[in-house]
Image (cartoon, rainbow, N blue to C red; front, side):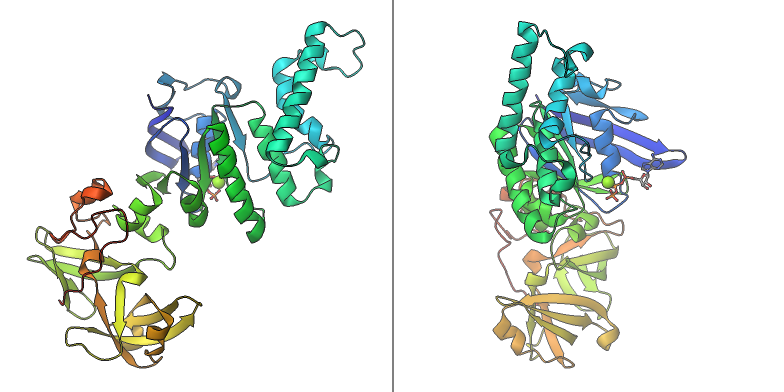
Length: 408
Ligand SMILES: Nc1ncnc2c1ncn2[C@@H]1O[C@H](COP(=O)(O)OP(=O)(O)OP(=O)(O)O)[C@@H](O)[C@H]1O
Ligand SMILES: [Mg+2]
């Protein structure tokens, strides 16, 4: 049974719909990232799952049980927010102990000056001290227990917030952009720590972010959320190589997927900018299409091979092991901008300001209809059994599609 099931969840603030029918199933122990631009409704979704916000329609199930309307503390979830939300007047140890104190001691038993402690209270207090020590050692802040939050760095505060979330051993972690206040180096190392921690504890995690690198490096699966809808759910590789929606395609991968306007005309897919036929796709309905190609699948050569598409070279970036060559396709330098990822030696043969010639690897082309949906229904199948949109086997594994250069 799935651990968490979100069914057709809808939420509006006033007249503004924020969640427009979210469906998402999460297995026990899975790490799922919800990735989307600012304002798409990620935090709202997380707050609803936590029980901090009510939804208008749909259901949330935990272990098959509907939890709509259940109070946050009965849901067995812990939330880590971007702002650490630590109590400034308490020490780290007291901040960590708080969730256990609130859960395990009555109001009277919490008073520090209670002199005659029952055996039970004494044992509970000892358990809490053990719990604090264990959680602190998990995130390596044992040496900081007596400090106040103001005496900690951002990364240390974030670790305290994590420890405080996991101290109750919740069955579900909800993390809302927990690394956005950290600098790049600290973010990378904390990223790895969070994943290790989640793996060690086996806790299901929903991690909200607008940072594709975080989503791709941390999550088992990514749910791409745009304007209150989830447009694709899959592993980073699936979404990278088999985007089912153009918005998902553009959200994963740096530099972004190149995208060109085109038309389908009796199976011939034509680039609008130049009129060149880039591929035959039988079954494509006549009309406008969008043609996508990742930068590494765009081949550039300095001399016309006969079937190349002339492009204007506008800019070159050397990045060490690779180079990015920026071009404009059609209409001189005013054409559609695109980027090719090349090895630096090949990039050196392209001169800025001169015409180069592009070929698209057909096996690696992505075709989307006018609404941005992928034209190839097979792309919804698992990667290992996907023929390309063009009737060729273009990637029998989840490795990169096999490059296949076929002239238009
Ligand atoms: N309490 C509220 N009242 C009214 N509108 C709200 C409320 N909370 C959120 N919104 C609106 O709902 C939309 C989604 O907000 P939400 O915070 O879920 O986005 P997000 O994806 O988390 O964005 P970010 O990446 O910037 O954190 C936004 O347009 C926001 O202005
Ligand atoms: Mg948010």
